[in-house]
Length: 353
Image (tube, one colour):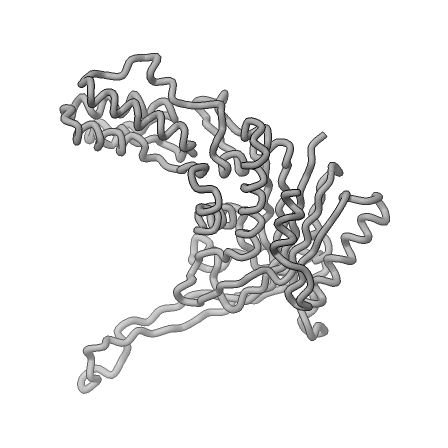
């Protein structure tokens, strides 16, 4: 039976544009009949995965998501004395193991690029590097058996957590052990516009007193509810039974989700934030989000303390689920930075115990 770890987080961000839509404005969603701020799960996962915190904690066990495997191979082959035409052909043979390649008759070098992003594990990248070094040393083309570069043995914690899909090689797909919901504000929002100007430092205003640039950007502030569900049993399976590495991944993800903010417009807004409240649950029960706690939004006209009201609503919904369904988790632990209760170190111990 699978063991699940669920994380529920409330994080307050000041005026910001954390995650932009195609028009450059903050992403939104309608929930409970009102507009909410939203940060996509894709944005959150990339933010956490690429953070120094996550990278340092799992050094040597982080994959690389890229289209450019073939370009790196080509460059190493050429640097090793392989003729350009041969280098392109050999690079295409190697990169083609990870996905379909682009077609560009006008520029053959572009054909070493994979059409879709592929998440490559450290072991697979090492295999590519070793093969290229061998080809350079022996000045020959790769043999068919040497091109089996994909691996079932997973060592990349981020691939084990968030999964991998290879359309052309489905046998090497990895089912994600972690699901991340879109973060959504617990209250209604109205997107505002920041009208800004930039002034030329060398303009003494004797002739032109105006700004050298005028712009506009959308922003809003919000208290977000975030939900993460980790299937620990599947994560361990994805990592070939390495429970110690699975625990490192769970700990790193929990800390990153609690402390690392999305990167959108950070230089403009400085919207760094830690979670104000974290509820961790674990058990074999069927997981469930607590987002319904905010189907009725926190009322900005009546609430004097959004954070406290949101925490109260979240805890209340957890208790109501337990009342009608029975215990929805075997154990739980919470951190409340509004009241100063709980500790992050104890949360991390709890989720990895």
